Length: 155
Picture 1 (spheres, rainbow, N blue to C red):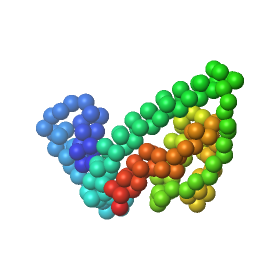
Picture 2 (cartoon, rainbow, N blue to C red):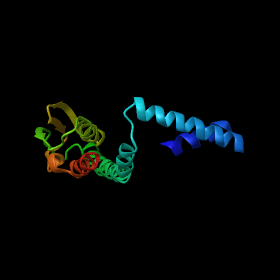
Picture 3 (cartoon, one colour):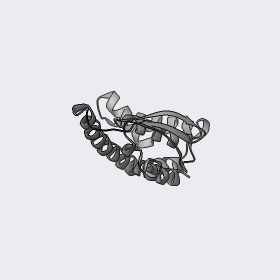
């Protein structure tokens, strides 16, 4: 964070001279000390966040792949209306412990075409699926596995 603050100072200043770098070091150190003292920030927390970056990038690409796969499936139902489909409202729970992970899963389900998270109450999801094939394995999907790994890193 210190280096980020220093880089931000230099970018906003627009020039790199000895004076601006020294003043930037001073301001970055002061802001960093303020964050550590009053905002419950620490280098240990920063290390945890940095360890999450590869998992977040991986999660993003898994989400993109699932969006494409679900789009193809949903388009098949739209293009051929005679294709039989069996809409389903399913309930399931996951071992996710944090509220952030639960909400991320709910939003990821809603982002994939053909599925909508209707409700999330105390870790129990209610999801509407365009076809019951879309609900298969939803409670132990790749999303859940990655979110569990992210929770392990942040503990």
